[in-house]
Image: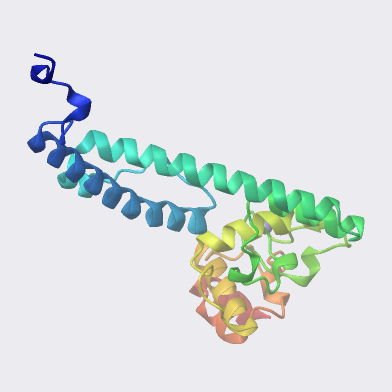
Amino acid sequence: MTDRILRADRLEQSMNIGKERRVAQFIRDYRSVAVQIGPRQWRLFFETGQINKNLPATDLNHICGAAPVQMATRQVVEQIKSWISNRANEFADIVRSSKLPPKLRKQLYAINRRRAWFITSTPLKGIDKECSSCGYVDRRNRRSQSEFLCRFCGMQKHADVNAACTVKGRRSSGLGDKFPTKDAILAMLTRQHSERFPRSQGAAADPRLTNRYWSVAARNALTQDLASCVQKQ
Ligand SMILES: [Zn+2]
């Protein structure tokens, strides 16, 4: 009589074979969605310094449906967030236990707060002379070791804080994943600035006209308005 009692845990299949197959397939699909979301979030992080749990991935919906894709996105983001936060803590510990001079430490803490450690992938040339607000590059922007005052837009910040902001800005400006020469960076920065502020402030006021970083070619690239100012000089 006892051997006629059906015990599920003694069966070879504890689950209906068709259902088990569907579950196995779902797990495979879910994993394939997750490994596609991971690189997208990392790319976002390298480009903007942030990850986004609401980043749409609707092109993956056909794999296992919209709800699992959303769930996978959130799960991946949480994993990355926790990983990044652990690295930030480690970085702070290393700086704290080091014998670095206080000024450099302060700079490293500022970098850490902005999660901007991927410094080797960001061209840093001239970073201390570039305004993080308007992008203007000028030696004269740097008034002292700690003081930064933009000659173009008037922005004033602690020089280290300005540099940390600029690292972030450069990463998203398209300079981040290239390793150009110093001249190429200057040419690009001056061109970007000229495009952003094409109108001259006047021959006397516009610091670009007396800035040695603005090559003749870069000045000529400015609009007629500024070009005519240069000619008048
Ligand atoms: Zn500025």
